[in-house]
Length: 255
Image 1 (spheres, rainbow, N blue to C red):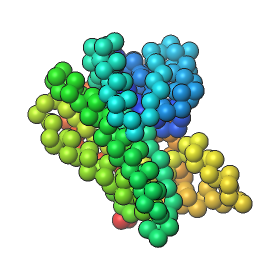
Image 2 (image 1 turned 30 degrees about the vertical axis):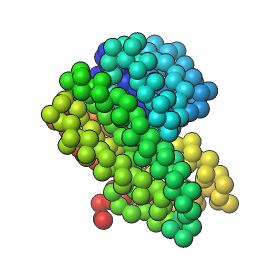
Image 3 (image 1 turned 60 degrees about the vertical axis):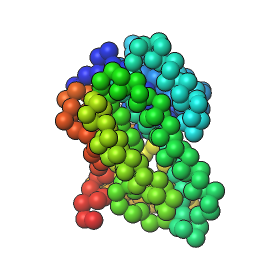
């Protein structure tokens, strides 16, 4: 198993879904995990699970759209631990619709979380990482940041931006010891997706339709995405940077 012993890590959107799975796996691998979420109760729950299982964690209440709040969290963690080794920008939201079904407010809301949130948190930790001569940033993009997805105009727009942002950080700061990669999942069985499936008249049929876009014929589990994050976070991936890591069940194979 890849190890993160003595690593100080932050995971945004870690109160549920992929973020929760990443936080729990990082802790199992020996890292301290700052569990960041705008839902304070959810953050407390994930951190509590980690601590109950012998790991090191702290719940951090933060909305990543708050730039000053991101700076305060970064400074607080640095003051407590001296440095930050790994940042996982996982917090994100979705929107369904074509351009004609998307209002400007919808795009602004998506941008504020999916792009500006990644910008805010990365900028908040980057100076410290550069000062340490090392740092690792992992962004959660999407298959929708690599290929277009029908009826996901705003979502794809923001996720393409995350892929571009990732490559720019990797290129601009490689000489300063910074690595930056992004994970591009296909559809994943998160609580959000499960709740949405229940809204359909036939949830089983809806699941099959969503799963059919992946060649493997199913959605991913959050833990499968977390395993990729662990690899990118550990020293064994030291020669990997600027890479969109596709975990899409074969969705993009025929594109």
